[in-house]
Length: 295
Image (tube, rainbow, N blue to C red; front, side, top):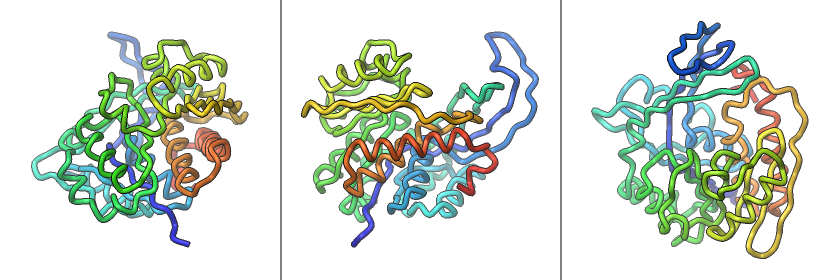
């Protein structure tokens, strides 16, 4: 049987990760302990996660003609992601971010989108070869809304499913909402879109129920509480978090999304696909950053 294809249309960032005792407050300077680079961006992370889960993974995106872009492309090659349709934009700077981790493994980050903001319909047209083979398309909110709409339209026309990881939180267009089959959000994004606090699994379940007013299916992740699912057929369930010792939460959401898309592309039942993604995210947060590339 042909291995299904998950295509990710989205962001690539070169991350600078800083290890510090705490994140600084406004006007405060904190002395950090160490720093290290990492290839990321929600799009890049999700493509790597899907490839690691055993499906074919393709990335459609853009990097600058700089050292960060070279590193990002090399990382996709190293992790088995088809990056033939990642454009190298002359004169543009690659996307990047700075993430500061505290002693509990939680983090805050600032992103500079750079070349990710130049993505558009032409990038989708150029990638027609993978679009027509796509079983599941993954989108995020780190590229222009119009570009996401173009990608979703093309994949839907070819019979694929569209999964939107609506992160970071922002107001979404009615057109993109209508093209989305499944929305995935974390607690902060769910509160923004659904208007209810998500600090418990019950809160996540209520947020998922509200989100299906706009989307056919909704998944709400609630960190250490677990994950909730709801759809318009009446299906609803919640899974508790898998107990692990948290080393770093960085990238946990992207790991979940990529692993979930892989299960969905394979035709796994919804609860099984979400359970596998839940386990993948738990494994990631228990793994030190420096050892993740070998997972």
